[in-house]
Image 1: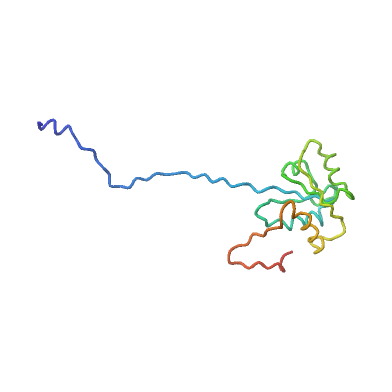
Image 2: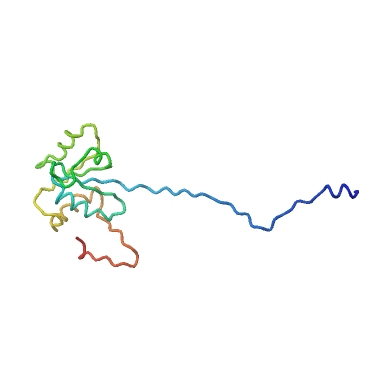
Length: 157
C-alpha cells in the first residue's frame, strides 16, 4: 500500500465516554372514584358520610343537599362530577326522586342508604349506621396514615 492510500483509510474512532440515553417513563395513576353523599340540608348525614371517607385514598368525596337552603346545594355539575351517588333516605325525604325530577338527563348510579334524619353530625350512632350501610358498597373507611405517625382516633372531629 502506498502512503497516499494509507492516509485515506482511517480506522473508526471509539469514544471512551459512556453512552447516555434518556427514557421517558409514563406512569398512569388510576383516578380515585368520585363519591357524592346527599341528604336534605347537607348539615348532618351527608357531611358525616363525607367526613368518614375524606381521608380514604380510594375515593374523592363530596356532599350536598337537595333543599334550596342546604349548605352545599346539589347542582347538575356536582352530579355529573360523581361516579356514584348515595342518598340518605328515599322513603322519608324522597332524595332519589328529587334528583331524578330536577336532573332527568343525568344518569348516575344512586344508592339509598335508608338513614333517617334524627342524628347530629358526627353522632356515634349515625357513624355506626352509615358504616354498616356503606360497607357493602365502599368497604370500611380507610385512613391514610403517614409512616411514623400514630393515628389517634380520639382527636378526630
